[in-house]
Amino acid sequence: MSASPLYDVIIVGMGPAGASAAYELSLAGLSVLGLEKQTHPRYKVCGGGLSARIEKILPSDFKDVIEDTVYRMIFSYGPEESYCVESPKPMAYMVMRSRFDQWLVEKAQQAGTDVHEDEPARTFTKLPDGIEVRTARSRYHGRVVIGADGALSTVAQQLFSERRLQKIPALESEVFSDSSRHHGYANTALISLNAAKKGYGWIFPKQQGLSIGVGEFVRGMNRPKRSFQQFSREEPTLAGLQIPLPLGHPIPVFNRSPGVTNERWNNGLVHGRALLVGDAGHLVDPLLGEGIYYAVRSGQLAGASIVHALKNSSPDFDEYERAVINEFGREFQIASRLGRLVYGVPRSWHRWVGKTFPGPYQGVLQRYCAMLQGQETYQTLWARIMSGLRRPFVRRS
Ligand SMILES: Cc1cc2nc3c(=O)[nH]c(=O)nc-3n(C[C@H](O)[C@H](O)[C@H](O)COP(=O)(O)OP(=O)(O)OC[C@H]3O[C@@H](n4cnc5c(N)ncnc54)[C@H](O)[C@@H]3O)c2cc1C
Image 1 (cartoon, rainbow, N blue to C red):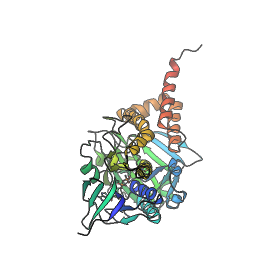
Image 2: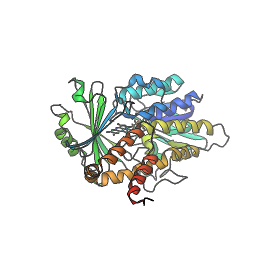
Image 3: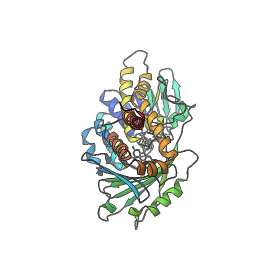
Image 4: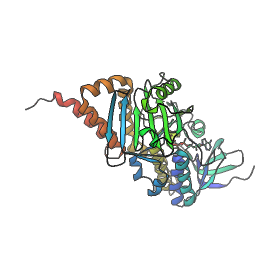
């Protein structure tokens, strides 16, 4: 085994979280090593839906790797009940993760990150002035280590051993189809609330076909394979398509218990000189399982905090955790509350509420889409729902 080269930061995993952190750190002039288990471009089980607000945090040429732009979202509960929200502005961008992630990694490399592919990190040893990372090929010394190695993070398992968090199962299949703009899904995404018992199914448009999947969001109610088969069979717009068997991967959604305090993000994102970003830190929206936006943003926040901390003789990396709490804490708590409402009684929510109060229901869906565009937040959405509920009880003067 060779001697141990020294880096300011070693990043384990070069998905959206790791590559975004690497880009930020390399731009600031730090020496960065990115270790990646696979070789880009690689397939990643993922719907590849980016909420449109991501354009505020990505370099503008990300549009080079977009497969389709969504201006229309259909929320359905079976064929009869569907609600459509349209906008002249993009609500979401669709990517294939192989292209998108490779683009992000190339950005980091151009900024100066040293990327070693096909080299998984295996063990981590805490040292007084950093962490030693061992792979099958070598060992490396980082002043700081970022765990960006996804839902099954080795960094989290070895360096944050007290973590007990929630992962929900999800399945995804890619249908390659040349039928006229893929069964009418050009610029259109479908969210089906009856596709899974306590979750949802999606159909997302891509350049050469459709991404189809299901996610189950409540523990103990998980039968994703059955849900996927049923969704593929019963969703009328999929009739006649040959849908390949789906692949599965857990989604590590934000867990409301024990919750976020002003000081700590669940069981912590910082431990000494190790930081967790993206899925490794369970930074996934618990309502719809959106994780790419939070992976990119947490990578950027970690990068900025490390640049700041390493300027001090006794660096404090907790600033990163405070930044995450500040940006996502309240948002995820409300998303979790909405998730309990929507998945607790999905049928009543969509069918009864939708039929009884069609205007306000459509309004909530519209505001949800405005949130994807960055014009609303979960906090403003919740405040509007609450004031709408209170209105009938307020006495008119
Ligand atoms: C079925 C499904 C559908 C989804 N759909 C969407 C969607 O439409 N929109 C959305 O926003 N989110 C979606 N998500 C969530 C999204 O995929 C994740 O939140 C996102 O990939 C997180 O990015 P990340 O960089 O944290 O982790 P990852 O993308 O998982 O990247 C981790 C990287 O680390 C590497 N790695 C792992 N272990 C090691 C190791 N020991 N050493 C070195 N490298 C290692 C992996 O090879 C990988 O490249 C979906 C997830 C699933 C499962």
